[in-house]
Every structure is written in structure tokens, then in C-alpha cells.
Image (cartoon, rainbow, N blue to C red; front, side, top):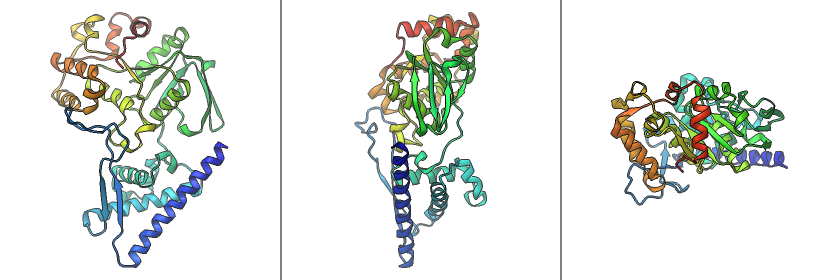
Length: 362
């Protein structure tokens, strides 16, 4: 049944693409400039006092593209070029990455950002996700722990080797038969922390699933995490560095990114809790002064900008207070700084104590 549903979705999307391109051609044949309406989405504004509706999935405006504006001619041209490639992928039931698409016409596209924008415009036009276009991202994420599942016929049995890293599946929509004995999901910012937990056999003594996006998470990692949350109904904790970059990663997991605000429902983890590291952890867990790094001017500007985001005041005032504390103290530190006590301090003391005391901010 699921396979038939996917086929009907693809057929419906191909029909919409055909109707759209036909309307463009008809307008041109009649000497008229086509008008393409692109809805605009955002998941936050930079006014913490605003009575906004940024948390809504509804469009926050509309942009009309027309050949009458010379500045928009190139954008329409690139949109149609990418749409032609997408149509071919769908018709042939093949998948490609954004990078693959760029290299099909590098002299025309000029930059990867042009392709990225065209794909976003197409998703908004046809009210679909990127995976519906058969455009996939190259997966960077890793997973280990009390979990097994299948993806497009391939078996991923993390349960057979609890502390072995498995790649996060790229075709998340084809993941099925998810089985888990975990009590919670732990998302860690960096691969180095993930490997530290693997080396310490963390999942052997802690019944959990560990996921990392290896830095800023890609679409596959975020979609996979969302799928696990929906199917397993487990609490999700996130561990990031105590710095502006770590907080940005945490916010991307929880609230989604501005670049993909049009598809926010399938990409965010709304119940995620912030496990750490908090500015106060440096005192509570005795991080030496030499492990604390001064915030750079860029760090300060980034933090001040994040403090303006409406969702922090509206939904996560405690997170906002922690950011203000970091800014006031003027220092940051990495999760690995906790290894000053012992190499296994993170896995044997810090994380278990946080989980036991539910030391996460919702």
C-alpha cells in the first residue's frame, strides 16, 4: 500500500509540473509575461516583543516573479531549468543531490546557492518537501544504540553492535520496521563526542539511541530524528558546546532553520530538551579557568542576534536566560573540557547525572 501511495504522489506531482509549465508556455505564446507566486515562510522574527504568528505554518507573505522585472528573469530561468531536471528524476524514478543538479549546468547556475534557491521555490510552489522531488542530501549523520530498522530493503541492526556507528539513512521516507528498546534519544553536536561515547561503551550501560549530525545537521539527520520521535515517543535530549555555534545547532534541531521554514513540520524536534552544556556547568562541574575561552566579537554579535528571536521569549525563556548568562560572563567552553577530570567523565558522570536529575531545559 505504501509503495502505491508513493507512486500516486509522484504521478500527482508530475501532473502539477506539466500543468505549471503549460501555463508558462501559453502565457509566452500570447505575448504575456508569466507571473509566478512564491509564498514566503519564516519560523521566527527578530522582535521578542512582537505579537507575531511565526510559530504558525501559514505563509508570512508572497513574492510575485515576473519577466517584466529584469532582476527576476534569471531566477525564473534557473527555476525552470531545475524543474526540468526534477521532472526527469521523477519520471525515471531516480534520486540526485543538489550538488548533482548544480554540476549538470555549472556555467548557467554559477553557484550552488542558485540551485538551492530554485529547489526551495519549487517546494513552495508545489507544496511539497524536497524528498518528494527525489532530491536527497548526502547524509552526514551517525546513529548507534538500542535500535534496528530497514531502509529500502537494507537492514540496519544497531542492536547487534550497540556502540558501532551506523550511517543515518538518506531515504528516510523508506525507513520501516523500526524496533527499539531505548529509554531516550541523545543527540550530540559533534562526532568527537559521539566517538567518545562509543569508545566508553555508553550504550551498553545506558539504554538509549545516540545520534549526531556531525556539526550542523543535514536534512536527512533532522528528518530521521523526527521519524524516531514520532514512532518511538521517547524523550529527546541534546548535548552541544557552550558557545553560540552549539546553541544555533540546538535551535535548528528544535525550531528548524529559516532557510527551510516552508518544510518546518517535518524537520523540527519540538519536544527536544537541552541537556547541556550550560554556562553554569563550568562552576557546577569544576571546569578550570584555562579551559574557558573568551567570546570573540563575532560570538557576541551572534549571541545578541539570537537573543532577539521571538521563539526564545515566547517558548523558551530559560534558554534565553542561559544565553544572556553566557554573554554576561563573556566565556565559552567545549563539551570535551569536561575530560579534564577523566577521559570518561562525560559518559560516566556528566550525562547520567543530567538524565537522572532531568537536568534538561524543555
